[in-house]
Image 1 (spheres, rainbow, N blue to C red):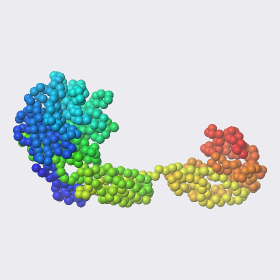
Image 2 (tube, helix red, strand yellow):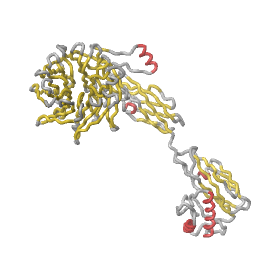
Image 3 (cartoon, one colour):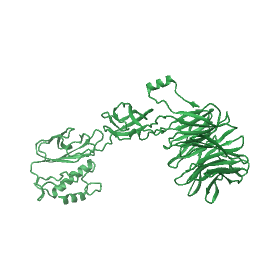
Image 4 (cartoon, rainbow, N blue to C red):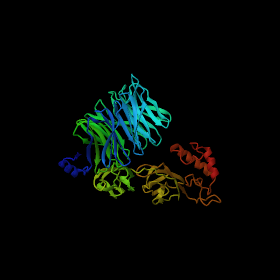
Length: 622
């Protein structure tokens, strides 16, 4: 039977006008595998290396374990075990030689049994008959040796147990000895390190639990323990490429399908399909992109859900022509789902598979760039986190332009975004990921950030002028030796004025200074450099007004300087030379500065104040 699910034409037209959307070309197909008698309950599916399905299932009419497989010639069926009442709660896995292995329950002997097939045919063995073992079981392989999780009832309570086989035979151990645990169990084995994980139901607390075994033994964790209880029925477990567990299950309080997963931050869970009566007989698999796929029974239909990289779930009905029971899911090498399930209306085993092209699944991208700086993203660019489940190569094309800036995009996903001049904030544009047949849209968000601003650096300046003259310093003036690491334009702002004359300072750093009539000595003013965002620290400008030439010390080609490189030693007593008397006068000036302004570069001994030790330091420099 072939089913197609298309949106209403009017909806497609309206949606296309607003936001182009792909029309799914993939189609679900289904067929009956066997319908003689009441067959198909408790089915379990796996695929061989050629992609052909192998299914174990229960024949209720004959109370037998059966096995079906498909090849180029079609479907084949056989009875595996018909001794007594056997074959419920089957679990199947195919080994590296394409041989099937099955765990199942022997109701006649209340025992866990195991069957496997090789070139010599089928082989049967009892794993354990202790108490009542194997009503619920799940099988996995490690190096083609079977590992089985199963429930064990000691006559009073259920417990979770684990069995494995090696060259010496079967071994068993308890994974969780708590009372009332172990039903609805599902086993997965990490082939890289042989770590085991089991999801299962804790009936005592109504919670979903997870047990894992490493070199330190068995450990148990509670995954979902709601106050309303009954979370964890029909659990199914799969491991991703990093070994993290993913679990599908039913929470009976709301009759909803739920999904739990673990990562470096711990356990997380979310609802998948609600409201309604969903989540019975779940089965989960992880694709090569680490996305979960789930088959389940809900609202009278066989359903299939997969989680897109964007985080949203896509849910489709698979078969709604009958009432259904147990489901089992496998993914082929192309990530196409294959499902075995029970048709309750016709008491038959059925098989469903998806064919056709599936639309790409693009993911939202987020980038940042500084103000006034182009963002250049190399290939694969926006396509790097997009996937195509069919493995088709994807190309990108620009759909909608950003509102603040320009963008150019290449088919390989690379692009260049140039923000509008001076713009800061968030912009977005959309693109289409195309597989050559179908396309899907995704959004790109770019956060344009203000440039990180550094504080300007202003430095002290010294000038010399004659008595009763006028000092004119052109731009950049006092800003000439100031810096801004960001390259911002600087402006000079006066902080304190001179006390022995008049000074006019322009923002470009130029200034004019006229001393008082006949004044001789040093006059000072201070300023800051501003980059339109923040002021620098205060810098000082000293102006020596003198009627005598200033002579350097013998052997010096220029005047001594302070730690900032500014000339600070002047002939303050006007005797035509630099001597200790100038140091004393200079100290008196600095003492006044210290009393009225912050201590700056003149605290040469670094003790936080200007004192006699600074005089000695100055004298030594001179």
